[in-house]
Amino acid sequence: PQQAETSPEDPEPSDAPEQKSVMIPFDFDAMQEINPDIYAWLVVPGTNIDCPILQSRTDDQFYNDHGIDGKPFILGAVYSQKTYNSKTFQDPMTFLYGHGTYAGQPADFDQLNDFADKLFFDTHREILVYVRDEMYVYTIFAACNHGNEHVLRYYDFSDESSFDLFFDAFYDESKSCDHLDPASMPQFGDKLLTLSTCYEPNNKQ
Image (cartoon, rainbow, N blue to C red):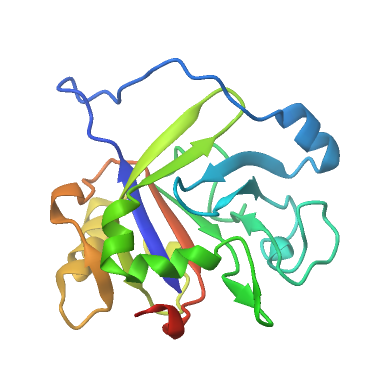
């Protein structure tokens, strides 16, 4: 799957993340009346990625083929998996999944493949995640075409050796990492975010 890997903005000298007051522009109470599985909102500025994030309490794959209202929907929704991630974004690595296209129709992560283009990558380097009382800002450091294995099943990002093993591979020229910003590479202990979708080769121009 094509992935936009992200890490938090540079910390202050105290190593504590910068914190600012922010107004949350989403009514989570209203959204959860539609579906209590909605727990966050994802925005990639400058793209059409602007959508709720869901997590099923019973089926990790539920929103692969169900919409934000919980009804069957071919394009699915953006979701995380309860087996591997909490809803706090405080896990060492949080994965969000979504379709790029399905049966020729664009889905929530349709523009994620555009990160294969260097100019697009260079000019779209920020991801915003809103929860009820906070907004998290991530800096995109890599766009990679990864294998089909379930990363969170095989890598324990709370273990430093496993963390290093995963990210050291990004420097391997035999791997398909379309773009990489070494200056923004994460350090062990950072809270990371991956956006994952199916790779569309036609978008890699």
